[in-house]
Length: 530
Ligand SMILES: Nc1ncnc2c1ncn2[C@@H]1O[C@H](COP(=O)(O)OP(=O)(O)O)[C@@H](O)[C@H]1O
Ligand SMILES: C=C(OP(=O)(O)O)C(=O)O
Ligand SMILES: [Mn+2]
Image 1: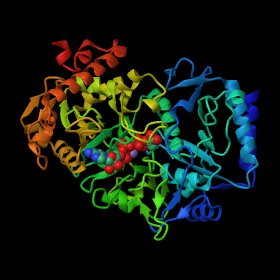
Image 2 (image 1 turned 90 degrees about the horizontal axis):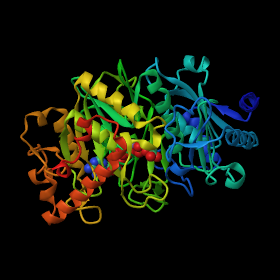
Image 3 (image 1 turned 90 degrees about the vertical axis):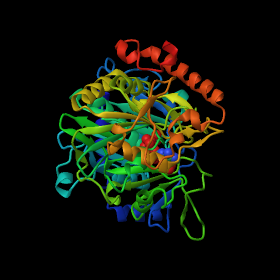
Image 4 (image 1 turned 60 degrees about the vertical axis):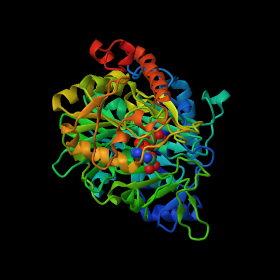
């Protein structure tokens, strides 16, 4: 059988003495420098460039349709099917490609901080810097854990292997293919490191709900009283930035799961956007970038070798990868109790959603299913300015199962633990993208702080008459007029028009969720039902 064949080729490959296994950070750094894969920066971090692709390639992502996945996966534009035969041919070619390299790198570790649900996994890389990335992003094993480690999923990344669509059955030279039957992710044709971590996230989004654990595209932190907050949001909306908070310990910046024991981080590291990064605005992230970190597509000053975070000549999606331990106030292991507060981050390019609003349970479900936000420049191929999108569960590119699976689980948990839910607009204010400006980070931080401290519970609220959202009228550290979008626009009529345009989009998008309860369907924009 084919399956056996590939598994034995993989085993053979891993027995070759060209495979360097779980090298230390220092050894990997030496490799990266001697192979000229990257450069040493004055921060101590490695800098690497990814060439043509500097963001994810969602159109090149597939799931193998086989007897394991056929009935389970929500097939469509996000989860494109590919045949077993196509996968097997490519798999063999990629393994052949890797067996011809002078050296390749393997990292064995885990996804999932809770020992009950963790996935022992392995990442095999053609590039040493990708292997360093994997080591920093996934959960590093102890010596004992490594000695007894048996991988239950393998990511194989061969960026210089390029597919030929006509022969290989892909859409382009790039491919990201998950086979749940063979427990393999195959990545080729792209050097963007984000694919490695996000593909394992997709794997966990398939596996965990089947164990009755909700997986979520969110960051998480914990306050002094042990109160847990989650921040959901599509790429670039503020999960990493807002979860790094000197007053709250970090659980994780991007991927979490919620079991009947509480929440846990899926990863062991962070992957921060670093466009315009400054110590003043984001001190913890700025200082996390040091020896062992990886700066991706960040331009260096040629003389000082210091990163120039304002330079977006390679991409706006510049990134820093570092182990979570590089942040000084963290929870270790990355496990905590049940969330008290849930924040949905939306980067509203229309500039009409309130900077913060408190949601009813029905509104929470409505907005979770809608997942309205923007794709921000650079995070996906072809996106050069914020583009309004409805990304269900604030993470549609990473969800193999139907949105209702995740939404129903979240709804039950919100009910059970009585969590407060807020919608926070980290996008535009005072006008749409191009006219208004990005919400001030200091204001967003102040609003989030007030929400987490319970200060908004006793504040007077007003309801906006287009979306039906409850907006606080005061918030410490934020001018009153910022809280009400209409007041931030020069032209109130223009605001109204734009807001109604967005409300209509919400309405049109939600038609596909006609199976959900009437109460949830009614929790959308209010002016349309008048
Ligand atoms: N009001 C705001 N709230 C959050 N982030 C903001 C805000 N204004 C600007 N930003 C910037 O937006 C980016 C958010 O990115 P990040 O936190 O990495 O997103 P995510 O983790 O959700 O992908 C950062 O570069 C941050 O500095
Ligand atoms: C890494 C990504 O997203 P996030 O910013 O959510 O981590 C990505 O979309 O490639
Ligand atoms: Mn992030």
